[in-house]
Structure formats: structure tokens, C-alpha cells
Image (cartoon, rainbow, N blue to C red; front, side):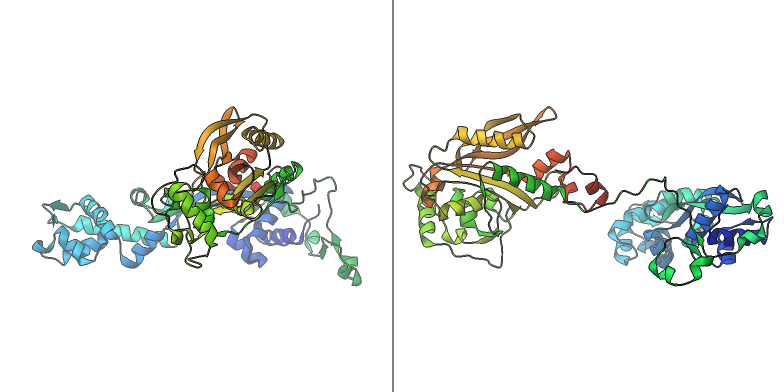
Length: 498
């Protein structure tokens, strides 16, 4: 049999005391190693060759937790309260006295009282009473302190007092358990009879390199054998993140359908982000609790003609036939800087720049809202937005477009339901059938005149928006949106190519 140099060294060391059982520390010392991995690997290989026998035993080691370390430094909670009681007169042993002493924190007081009651003290009418014979209390406190000191360096469960272990296991953070494995090695008959001449350490070549061949040492070296029938490792090559792959897939579908892509800035004004969409200035979504308003820039100027048009629209409906929202419109409010809450602001600004040019455009971008992070919400996420403005644009055209998109995404069953949005009329919600259930993925509708007339649009505007992360959860079969942004390489490698 061919042995590696480490295996030869370990076998030679064990043969120096052939009848003994060797511990890890003894093998490390005899072989002059500082890494137990050498012992584990060489010992396992020698056992496979039948040259040594390995005895394995499981054990539980108890050590101090964070509260236990603090108890060693400051004293156990019950010990601190007991020491305080010993220094007080009977009239000074009240609950208020303890709280004012600084011996315990507010959170510790209740726990400490329970521990003292367990030792034999009593709390009557807000004052502590101590039994006449305190020997048992002192013995218990000393035993508990000794137990923690025993765990300070790590103690085998079999060496610890069972009652004290049960007591401290019930107390949070004082002690922690670690399951360990202890191995010992003993020579087998084959190991004792193994030829000494075969234990000479020689240079072993694992990889042939140009540098090796330039010298002469390789002529006397042993070359490690290779099993050419073993499975080769699967290379973990780079690949796009599922979110990026999904974005590219969506982009290619819209481009294939004849749409052009547009982009926009993260920083916008409240006017373009909300006022232009006929969202009232007292709408709850505009509050600081829902929108990220900026301190720099705190204010961004907007062309006066838009401010005048939005004032007219919001206050009395302008010339659209609408009654508006009433009240007083604030141009200062409209010029506040914020992080965009939707990508619809991109399409609105595009229409303002080209109100008399027929278009079919879409955009995919990040948006920001003050959401509490949970399995379905993030404060930063992506939206897919699109519009169609051309002669004859209508609701049937919008529904057909969305059904075509989702069919290309692999979801042929699509339905729409009536809905309400401040800036579209009629409005609808889009749902797809997934695993036998209807799931809402976005909203759509025809922009209201209150939106399009201030922009100068010449034709009706079909618009829609959907959350990209929700669609990604659908495509990837996830039930927690946070999984999309966790750096889990194993999960990423196992995701399908989109």
C-alpha cells in the first residue's frame, strides 16, 4: 500500500508505543504538528488501510455564555442582592431601597427577587425578610459560583453537578453547550507488523509543474496516483443574478412588441411625482411616513407654466370638466425634492417633452417608499411601467397588450378587474393565474384628462405599472421577497436560467 508522508509519520509515532492508546494532543506532539486536521486525515487513512483502530466518543462541553461571563466579573445576581441585604438594617431592606441602590437594573429586579425566594428569603409588604439560619443560603451561593468557575474553561457534562446544571440551563445566557467528539488511536496487529523500511518519508509529487521539472529532485520522488474514473468537480462559473436575468427577459419582450425604453432620475419633485398625476396634496401617501423627502436638495424649481396648470387642475379642474380637489394648491409643496415613489413619473415627463408624437414606451427602474421590511415588502424595489399614446388608443388595446406580455412571460391565463387610481379612468387591476390561484400583479388604465391636458397630449394615453419583485417571486416560486437580495451563492447557483 502507498502511504503519504503524514500517514507514515503518524504510524511511525504510534509504533513507538505500540500497546498504548493515543490521544489527539499526544499525536500532535509526537508528530510535531500544530493542526489537528493532519491527525484526523492521516488517522482516517490509516484506519482505512487497517493499520490503526479509531475509538470515537461523543461529549457535551458546557462553557460560559455572555451573562455567565458578566456574572464571573460582577457576581451572580442573587449573590449581589444577598451581599446588599447583609449590609442593610431591617428597615432598609425594602423594594424601593433595592431599586435605589443601583445593585440591579430595572429588568433584573424581578428576576432577582424570584431567585432570593428560591433560596429561602421572603418578600412581605414590600420588605425582604431573611431566615435566622443562613448557612444553607451561603452554601448554595458558593456552589453556584464554583459551578460557573468550572465552566469558565469549558467542562465536560459528566464532570458537572447534575442539579446545578439543571438550574443554570433554565437561566438565559449563563451557560452554553457545545457537542464535541473525542477520538483516540490504537495500533492494530497489521500496524505493529508493518515494515519499518516503508516508513521513510520521501518527496511526493501531487502536481507536475515546470519549476519541478527544472530540478532533479523529481527523479527520486513518489508520484501520487490518480483515479481517472472519479467524477470531476462541476465548475461554478459566473452567471447573471436572477433579477438581472428577469429584467433582460422583460426588456427583450417589450422591445420585441415594438416598444422603446426610457429612463429617468431617482430624484424628482413632488409636482412631477404626484401633482402631475392628479394625486391630491393631502393624500396619505404623500406624508413623511410613506415618502422619502430630501434635505439636499430640499427644493427643486419647476417651470411656472406647469405650476399654473396644476394649480388650476387641482383647485377647480381647469378646462377638463372636472371639479378638481378644491382647496388651495401649494406650489411650495410641489417643488419639494424626493426619491421617486413610482416610475410613472418617467412616462409623465416623457409625455410632457413629446406630447404630439405617437409613442409606445416602457421603463424598468428602482423606486423608493417607506415600507417596513417583511416577506412581501421592501423600501427599495423595481417597477415596470409603460404607456401607449396614439390615435385610437383604447382600453381593449391596453388589455390585449398586457395579455400578450404575460403570455410571452409564460402565463396565458390573464384577467382584469375594475379598480381605482387617482390618475386613470377607467382603472383596472391585472391578475394572472398561478398554481390555481389568481394573483394581482399590477394596475392599468387610461390617463385622466386632469393628467394629460396640462401636458398637451394629443391622443388618449394607455398606462400600466407592475412590481418587478412580485413578478420575480412568481417566476422563481418564492414566498419571501427578501430571498432575492440575500447573498446565498448556493441558492443563486441552483436558480433556473431565465
